Image (cartoon, rainbow, N blue to C red; front, side):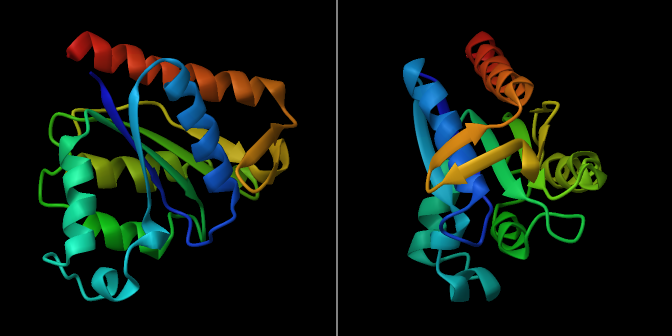
Length: 178
């Protein structure tokens, strides 16, 4: 069975990122895919900041990454990059820890000006960790969606189609590989 890990990189509990992750999880659940969701904000801050590789919660998160066939990384863009908490987490993933995995990056930001974050921040990170394939990401401008808790409403119906299509493309690639 295909195993996909959704990693949410937002430092806040109620966020656009969490709503997008829930939307994606629903798509994958409907397809009968095994899906895990990891919100990096729930990992112990001290363990992240002090690079405590042997902390039990960090080891559990590392194991989720290791056991996944693919990752979907959903993150806000702050100052033209992903949040530090997400970087701190990926710093604790072993060298080549994404080897053999396909990654779909999804980012959201206030303006289209941060669109290239997918190319110039996310792709190098996943590449250095050895990802087999990094799919074309989806960038979400904040004004294209509204959310309440984990519920998302697409103001732009084309965005909803692009997001769903990217998730289904990932699923097809993973099924073909396995």
